[in-house]
Length: 143
Image (tube, rainbow, N blue to C red; front, side, top):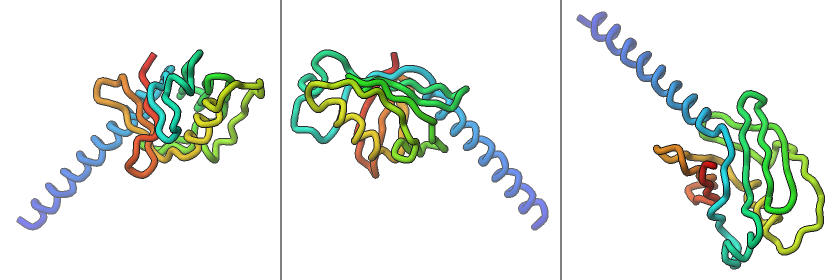
């Protein structure tokens, strides 16, 4: 009886671990594509004031394991550093164009990106949130 119980327990744990791996792979896969910023925390300037002409966007290319985008003024690009729901832009060694930009929206975007630790994607797959601790720092919509 003990052997049967032990075998069933091991079998159940194996099935549960397989399901959690599938969920993680699906979550990372749903990053693929272009996302447009619609919320950023921190600045005392209204969102429309930070980005009057062009909203920042971010593009994930999972085949090439790359991330790129536009911070409302300059383009950026670099390696994608993601594991499970953890994401790290600070250590990614991003390259960036260096055009002169009006306002501070571009620098607010990049400095906030450096603080991000994790991400989550809504169940409908249309909203991406970048999180530091338990605070949503940035929110994007799928393009």
